[in-house]
Each structure stands twice: as C-alpha cells, then as structure tokens.
Length: 444
Image (cartoon, rainbow, N blue to C red; front, side, top):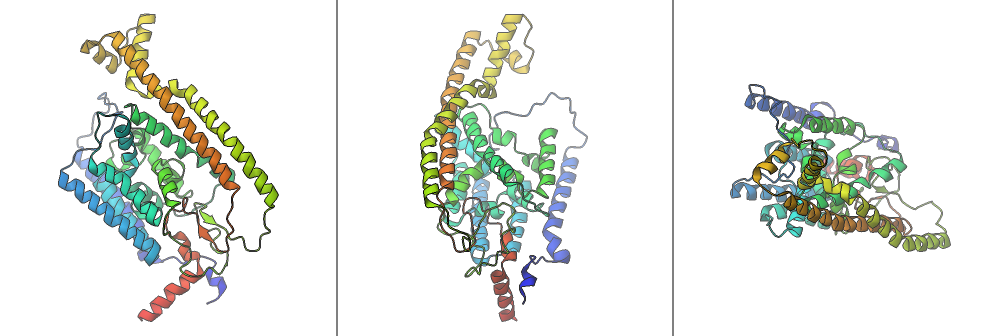
C-alpha cells in the first residue's frame, strides 16, 4: 500500500454508505406526515397562542423515565466502546441514527441533558423546586462519562448533535479569528441561561432550542426556520449549534479535559505523517512539535506573567459589565415586564391590554405588591449577573494564560476538551487503515 492511497479518507460507496442519511430523510418525512395527520384539519394560527416561557419536562410514567435512563446509559456505554475500543466511525453514525430516532423524534427532545442545566439551576437557587431524580441523572451521567472517556455523549448520543453530524457532508474550516470569537458565545449563553432559570424567569435553552421544534413540529415558525438554517449551514460548518451555542457543551468541554481515557487518532504509534492535520472540521487536533523550533522561554515567561496579572482586571471587567446590563437582563422575567407595563399605564393613561396585564387586574393583586416583586427580582438579577460576569471574566483570563503554557508533543492527538469523539480522523490515519485491513484479512 502506497502513501498516496492515504491522502483521502476511504468512504463506503453505494447504498451502504448512504443508508444512515437515507434513514434520516425517511424519519423527517415520516414524522412530518404523521404530524399532519394528527393535526388535520389545519390549525387556526390566529388563536392567540404564545410560546410558553417557563418550560418544564412533560410528565411521563415512572417506568418510562427509568427506561429512558437505561437507554441513555446503554447508548453512552456503546458510544464509549465504539470511539475508544472498536474505533468505528460507521458505528458512531449508526448510533447517531438510533439516538435521533429515540431521544429526538420518539422522546421529542425532552428531557435532555442540555436542557437539564436549567432544572439544576432552578433547584440550586430556589427551595420551592425539587429536581426529579431522573432529571438530575440525565444531567450528571454524560458528565461522568466525559470525565471517564471524553465527550462520547456528543459522539453519537445527543440528538441535537446527531442531526447535525448526519448533515455535515462537506466540512470547511472557518478562519481562526472567527472561530476564536464564536467559541466564547456558549459560555455567555450558559451564564445567562443559568441566571434566567435561577430567577424563575425563563428556560431559555428550551425556548430557543432550534431542533426541538423539528422534533415536535409545534414550535414557532421562526425557531423551526432557525433549525433548518442551522442544518443547512451544518452541511459546510459542522455542528454549528454544538460549537457556537450549546451551553451544556461548555460543561462537557471542562469535564472531558480531565478524562482518564480518550479517543486517539491512531490505534498505535503515530508515524507523524501529518495526514490528519485537515481531517478534523472542529479544529480539535493538536499538532506535533517535531521539526518546529522551540519557543523563546523568556518571551513565554513574560507573556505568562502579563496574562496572570491581567486576570483580576478581566474578572472585574466582567463583573461590572454584567452588573450594568442586569436591568436589561431582568426583562426576561414576566413580572418585571408586567410592572413596566403597569407603570407606563399610570404615567401615560394608556391602558395596558396585554394578557398578563388583564390577568393581573382580574386577580386583584395590588400595584405595590407587583412593584415590590419587581424590585426583588431586579436585585436577584443584579447579584446573579455580577457573579456570572465575574466567572466569565476569570474564564477568559485563564484561557489566555493557558495559551502561554504549551506542553511539548511528539505526536498528533485530539484536544480533550474540543474533540467530539466523532471518529472522522480515523479514516485519515494510515496506521488505523492498515490495522483495519489486517483485521479483515485475519477474519478471511
């Protein structure tokens, strides 16, 4: 076998290679047909329905909740085996098809570990809400597997990632500066989502989940269109939601960095062929230092000290910025918006006609009670936003410090935090390809 035969990854041809994508298409069409039959005749779109702000998981029989947990554990275990032991990209694709069918279209995306972040936040900061055990386990199990085996939940278990992975056909890489800016968005989204849930305002992750609308076909048309646009963009920019929006991915990124075992590009010793450099569409491959001149130690030390000294300023800056924008963030709470509406009515004489205002007037609650509630909520936002800004500032500062502490590497390896364990790099590695062919020859 010549080196030229390794330049491009091997792909299965014909129906066999396209079967996972055909099944994805069939699932989407079948789901749409069944939904149309259930909703016949056509719904009245002027019914005045508004998308719920504070979404909670739908109640299911306890036995089904534990079946969902058993399926989750089984899927995580299979994903770990396929990524680390079996090293099968096709197996992970088939697992993605199953996860999309079960956790996506059958379970309708709820409850998922991504959305469970909000339930945990609500339970931590509000004594009146007790988080169900199954929801807590949905939150913890993928993190536990990430700590042990890397981001195997992303590899083929998460339905949000699965539907994007199956549409990532012609991946391209974004400019490094664009990538660097975009990857900071999930940290901000996570902070605001936790703050919103903790203050009993909204479940932002659920409300603006672009794919739950596709799984249920009952979200607002803007969110369904947003999901379709993400899938269209995902043909070229792999997993745009996972990379640039997913708040749960922030936690998986952190836990995976400390994983005991992790997916590797090659099953044996790396031969430093450099064929995997462009294999990963997520820019998660750490290059070998072989053949590159060593960095200037004095310059590195100077950068390290500079960034360390700047960390407190980044933390203070984040705190002040989020403290200043907390009044705007508090508008996520319905009572704050209602108080503003009632106040405008008093000042201008123009009656408040929203449903919330009408319900408030009919309930007999006094304006002073409403305004006191508004003050309480704004104070909670001010305090919570300050902590969010502080943590984001610290995260940004220490990420800069990490850039100055580089470990010497003699092989190509995946970045434990950024790697989705998808297995795309397998088909570029000549050591892996040779091992697969040797295994086939031994079985003949």
